[in-house]
Each structure stands twice: as structure tokens, then as C-alpha cells.
Length: 277
Image (cartoon, rainbow, N blue to C red; front, side, top):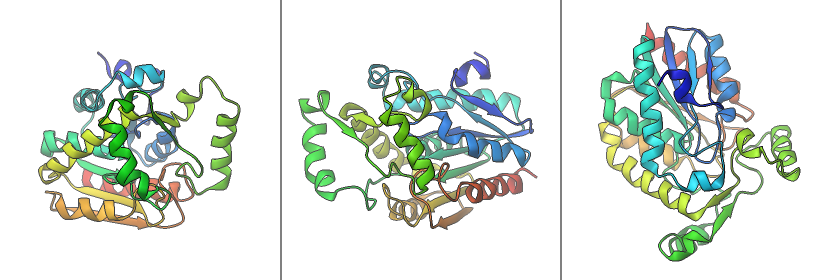
């Protein structure tokens, strides 16, 4: 399959640079959440490629039919195709997408020019995540037949501090737009999908030491879903000798859509361009 076929109808390619960044959107998200980020990278001289994760931009039924291995495999295929076309290939992932980026980097070592971790999520311990549900209720659901009947519904602030952007998300949800999953992703996550994400987290933790590419960790000090402890955890355990950090305020979990999105995209471009030349 060609690169254009692999990224899917809702994926995108921005820019015409010789060096490229493979963008991995978050679990239950869509390439739309990476669009602005990709455009900034393209303006800086890079090519941004964002595929649709396996099972996404479709129906909940389609999503629940996939596993974490399917998500990783869909990104691996795009990475290998990009290696044929571009001089250097970087990977930037958001939230669970950051874990997928790590998994690919752990497997392909130096072939990955660099990794950008945006709101890397190993623990759902942000200030908007109820600890009682995480510690007691979640295991009861995930490891019993209840997982086939229960879903978690995300509520405001939706990982976004910017009131204007948050209002746009809320408007789409209020209108009950049938195509909302293609625009902003799923805000009702089946427990079976959460279970797959837990398995992905476990596997990613085991492979942190195998990541040897340069890494840029970007994390908000105000993250509502995954506290900055996630970034610290990863930083201490990566095998890379070149680890840079950008701890940023005035933004929540979805860094690519929030108040500091331009600052984050520019810093990401600087990271890649410095390594590309």
C-alpha cells in the first residue's frame, strides 16, 4: 500500500520537507487534534504525516474490534513506508499516542531520528481523574464481564483549558453530530478499549529502556488527565542519552489544541531540525 492509502481518508500529509514527522493521535481521538501542530511543523520546513489509528474515525463497534497491537501495527506500517520516502523520520505522539511512538522507537532503534512525547500517559492521575474510581471501581469493571457493558464518558474540560476551543467541542457534542467521531473522536470509551489501553501501558513500561533515539518530553504542569509525574517516570527510565524536556503551564492534556499549542509546535520543530542537520 502507498503512504496515502495507509494514512486513511481522515489522515493528512502537510508540507514537502525531506525530513518528516509521523504524528500519532490519542486513543479515541482523530488526526484533527494533530492538524494545527502538523501545519506549524510544515511551515518550519518539515513534512507532517498523521495516519488514522486502527479502528478510529469509524464506529464504536469498529474500535472495540481492535487491540493495542492493531494500533501499534497501523503506525509501524506508516513508519516503514515513510522511511522509503523521507531522509529522516521522527515520531510525535499525543497521550496514548506517545506510548505508541515509544513502542515503535523501541523496536526500530536508531532508525527513528527522534521521539516527541506530548502528554505521555502511563497513569491516569491528573487533577480531574477521581482516585476512588481509578483504584477500586476500574479493576472491578475491567477484569469481569462488566467490561462488555460499561463505558466511561469524558466530561468538561475535555483536556482543554482554552475556553473557546472547549466551547467548540461542547457544541459538537450538544448537537449530537453523527460525524463527531470523525471530527473530535469518541467521548464515550468502552471498558474493553480501556482494558486494551492498560495492556498497552504495561508493554510500553517494559520497553522504555529500549528507546535510544533522542527524546523531547512535553508535559503540562496543569494536566487534568495525566500529572507531570508521568513525564518524570518516563524521563528516568528511557534508554536514550539525549533527553530534553519542556514543562509548560497554562494548558491541559490536549497540548495540540490548547493555549500553548504554537509554542509547543515550534519547540517540536526546533528539536527535529536540530537533529536533521
